[in-house]
Image 1 (cartoon, helix red, strand yellow):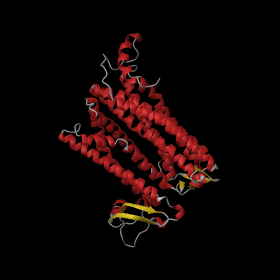
Image 2: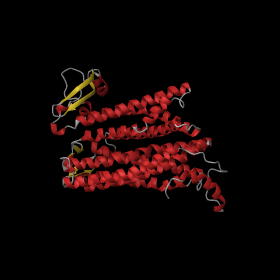
Image 3: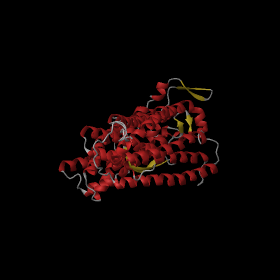
Image 4: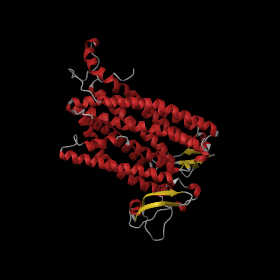
Length: 475
């Protein structure tokens, strides 16, 4: 297929499936925490706006959660089918970590998800709120185990190689490997940013269409506050993560910066734009800022860091790809900060909900959190190459013995099926967003502590509360 080898096709196939999958857990992580905040505010203030928003976004969360589970199962099978030698070599580390994710996180989420989604008028307020908290905690625990496994592949430690396979000797070191804290924090905040932008864009879109009410305004206000707080935090975490990567994966940093070699005694400039040419070993058309590379990456006025020429050609990541994927991530991050600051200024002026230029910008920024997340993921994973376990096992040694024809046919099948299945799911989710939150008629008691002694006596109130919010859901 297009002259690609089986190894390249296997990498593309896994990259394609993980790119689809990572979108849904990111929204799930952020949305679950958002639901906790909404329900907490409803219990505290008894303002029906928060109740209406909870019922609205919980439906979208449910659809997104389902697509995340389905897309995640495929990747688990790919470890055995396409990357069998890697699984045989490192499965004693990656296998248990993924198993812990299922045992501690997925079961936790699944156990409380039903109560969270369908127990609003069937359990007491404390139990329902506790269920929402447990689902949110489950999403964070799930991210912890997944990133522990992936981070170990980036900065492996706590193991020995015995008879040609990895044997863990210190699980604490395996889990708390050098890059894990930074990657976990970076990914979690990225999920919150993506969710804030999604919610904010939904609210801005409704306001532009004239659907101006307290629920929509609250959505926009909460999203912009979260964006204003998270964007600077993410920049700070990104700086720490960059310093950690420079220490443990210097070739990745050199590729990200398009930096080929140091000149004796001279500081490193920051290349804003350019085209790294892997064959010519130089960055063409480079637009540079003197000394800024040294300041950002060494926090000194004239510090140096390794260039790509200091690494053997077969050990260099593809600088052309990661140079630009990193800049897409950073550029969108800057726009997120701009959006948050603009919202703060308009809030101060009293025009947050009336400025159409701002609302259009907020709407366009809706998908940028997910785009930036994908760009960062590409930077991380492609920048690790040519290693599947950094410095321990090369990617070419971990792939299964499949033909290019087999990999091509399965890749085409994945593309077709994914776009159909997840395209339908995404379209349905966006239709729910377009409908907007509804104003439910108040009932005598929003929570019923247990089921009523005569269940049918509560049917009219329950139907009034739930039929409008679930008319588009299945089952």
